Length: 201
Ligand code: B4P
View 1: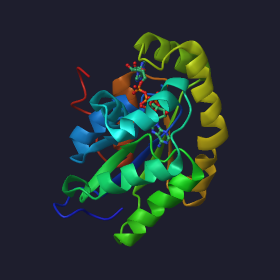
View 2: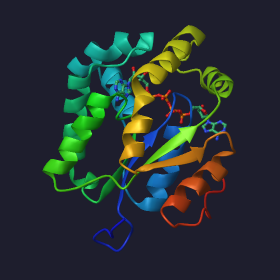
View 3: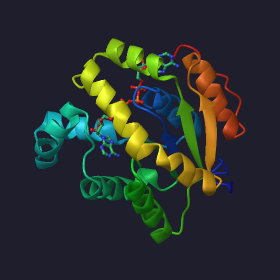
């Protein structure tokens, strides 16, 4: 892993894992410690829905049902976001890629910019715990049947990325069934940073 412009480790990171694994929670912690923006495609889509934009209108029903937004739409969203100035020194991608075509799109965006990923952190949590957490969270799409559909789609469409990134030697396994600060410490360890200062998350 090379060094960024200011001497900090390169951090072009993908957070991979099932819905409710805590990717969004960890992205906030890591963003602060690594000094790169957390980019959550789920949050971006929810903002679009709240604003009532064309994109929001297009994805609202899809998200409510637990289905995935199509790859072409997501490619536009991500290409535009990664083109912004704050993502130049690195980023934490939370919720993207979610399919093999999305992984290829991301590889293409980075290749065009002469860049590559630093690591893919796979957050692993048993399914019963995932359901428990998401139902506790109580977001609009956190009804049990919708959560089960999101988990099914994860196994079908997203889990193949584990092999994809494993072959590229980018995958790091993280035990997500631990307290938030322990999960953060495991992730920071990947970048050679001690997990201190994550209290009170
Ligand atoms: P997301 O917003 O990505 O939703 P998620 O996967 O359910 O959340 P996450 O894993 O980040 O969990 P969190 O930290 O909140 O996607 C929503 C929808 O958007 C998708 O269904 C899809 O329709 C669409 N979408 C987004 N990206 C897309 C893409 N690339 N392609 C197509 N469609 C896309 O944590 C969950 C809960 O657990 C929280 O309440 C938290 O407090 C708790 N928690 C976290 N860590 C914990 C820990 N260590 N211990 C105990 N509890 C913990």
